[in-house]
Image 1 (tube, rainbow, N blue to C red):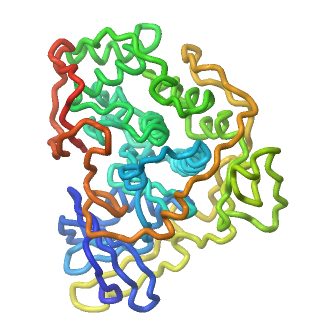
Image 2 (cartoon, rainbow, N blue to C red; image 1 turned 180 degrees about the vertical axis):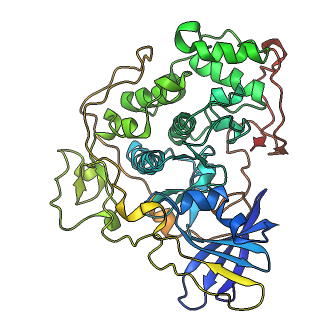
Image 3 (tube, one colour; image 1 turned 135 degrees about the horizontal axis):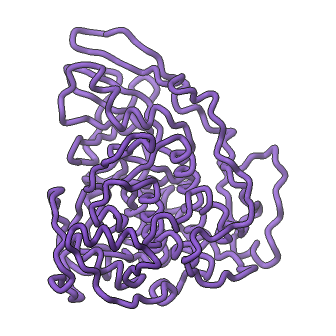
Length: 455
């Protein structure tokens, strides 16, 4: 740790604190996560989920773990530094994001999820605070709850912040899959369009009530397994018809509503995979590619008529399904294994050749015709030829961001999530992982509710 100078604490979570720091040798700004628990051997360290998952992944939309240090039995993770997280961009914003911005962000997150899922992991804690943003990129962070797909159930039921928690997890299923990440992305995508959480439940039971209020209660035809899960814990779903998402998210296009609807399906089997989501018509439109992502060796497709002025850009191309990475360095190319530098100090940096990273194939980039997952899904009709909305001032905002001394539980910069503007009041309160779902008639249905964070 003598190579790093800690600047200030920027996050505080259950398992560790996060500091903004500078590499004294290179001047690079990094984020250092200091674990609260002591680790007395490297065997303990390398078996941590965050280490096991991040050492296997090298993708431009997944935060880079640059170094792992154990010093005096304290474990430090050195990550690349990101200016802010997605929630910070939303919480003080008065103007809605353009659909082009939402599309660009979601496209990149689905790219990262497809890569992660194909390599045997799912995140389990996706939320705006764990999506870190720079001027050009959005990256998935905080893999403390990541789980190997190949690991055997039962899984822990208490995962993911409540508002983005899939219904099968709320109903205490131990057999969930990577589709929990897809549910979370549906809720996040809706929030990006409206700047309001889609399912802001005040408790686990109220969360299910909020879900039923939006998409209607599940039936035997739509989710037989869910009805069985509810019976197993003596829970009765409220009988609500739901509303059409377009009424809640009027700024979203038909294609966007269609994708959110499929992502927020009761039945996990009817939600698309990340790769299938990338094939959805919502991502077929041309939209702005940041300059740092452009591959100058590839000819660019001119924008459709009428969109050049809206985008205010001279170079527009259609995404092929993969982000150009010509200017991106390998995640772990500079990692080396160093002997102890002093008594009680060890470094373990060699992760580059773990698990055949060099031989892994990239995420499939072909775009076959999208097929709606599940025969019972009923998305709205998809509009064709929709013009792209202009990109807003977000890029300019990111360029001028300054970091304040706020606290949060992820690698991103900021504070614990307060209520966004125009949302129900109250303070965020940490709560334990033990919960019981009560009968539907015991659920408070008032419009005012306390905002809490779980997980």
